[in-house]
Image (cartoon, rainbow, N blue to C red; front, side, top):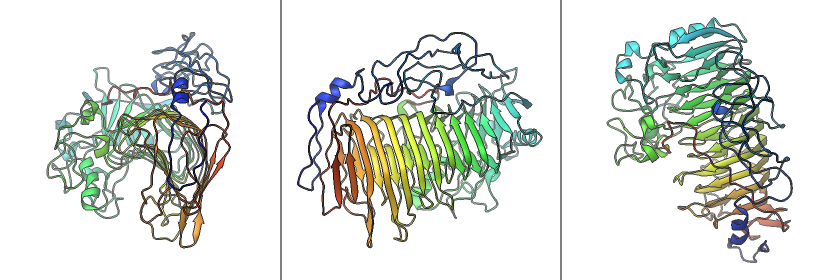
Length: 617
């Protein structure tokens, strides 16, 4: 391998790529220092159709060796098959046959595998074995939309709320309420807010869509602001709420659809705005939008999302707040879908929300950039969180770990998952009460060259503060992302009352394959220093390779210093093929531990299409 560049004596950042080493190793080459493959496979448990007995066909195997685990041939299968050695599965109508059904391509080591075998993870969740009530659909959706005539009258804005809520309220703990298609083909439910009981699971079966009402009055908390930009932005109840529940969940191969692009039917903006037009008022007027979330958890323990698709949220999709024990496994979060857009998100001019001018008529086509504040999954003040084998594409943070209350965010694992449009894998900006012990491994990011694309990010400001520590990123494959890395305690203007502190951050086995639009992307490295307080960013970069030269940001943010600043870099022991110069003026130090011999992470199996026919890309 070409010798690594040493530090320069001048302050200006010099970026140099070792193209020969990257190009020779990017295909199926073996990786050094360990066994097992890099990121691999295509689909995961999120695409399980049914369980069955039998021997799965041999999966496609990555030929290289990665950084962890012993590589061996996967025994994945396609369609509805399974592996004969799987544990007892659960079918869609009750208890299934032996074997874990899945789709996708087998792999090696700790990459995404069709049998989901990862010894570091707990057992895969299962569909409920006992159903207390089965409700059949009365409505018919086509191409992801309900006919506007169904709920044009406010009297019929949420026809299924009462029967779903009654079934949940009467269901014993340990059982499930199941939503199914009818024998005559009806496949949709239309509901306002519902509340999950402790120990009860809502099971949305394959082929079923649970749609949210488009009447703000159904969600209003009493302030009268839902569906407008006013007040504190907290005037809407969520579609599904669980408060202090134990062992509850939302599961199944069906869909929860928030109808964010549908025209509102009540309130001040009825007939002239969609939910996403209301969200854009935050940009055009500076006021807080009042839109409902789809799933909101308050407290409780051991909540499970399993195999469910959550899409087109008016605001955030899933928010676990102060939950102890949360699992999202095989989940898909997608916004906007084809129902509200065009293939490739090629919306005609003038058809999308305008960030400078409030809408006077409903927008008709949406992109991820015009569906504001549609965060995917935001665990806040929670502990023992597992997100695995899942897919995220939307208009804001795909995942954002937060800690804004009295409790810290502790012990999160985000593994074997894929990111597309959006602001990537974020921590913050709410870090007030501390974030500790976050492990991210085996992730792919394909940002589709979005102008708002972000890869991995830690963000805060000195109005929030808080300590963020013991954060690890391992086996990360990335391409077409505008800003692959951001570490920034000046994310927004603060009031200088509480200094953020980011330390013990490790990025290991990171491979950026480039972007036709953004080249190697832009990297931001900032620690905190203001008013006599200095909290340097302490970060280790180990086997971090860019196939195209990245730019190191030198643009100050919100009153902060010129980056890179107040950062203690440790480079190695694996190669890092860009250089950062030590600078006394900017309080930047670089410790070199790099050694020759380790090749880039093998990303040949990392990138897959979003597994939904409703995806516009």
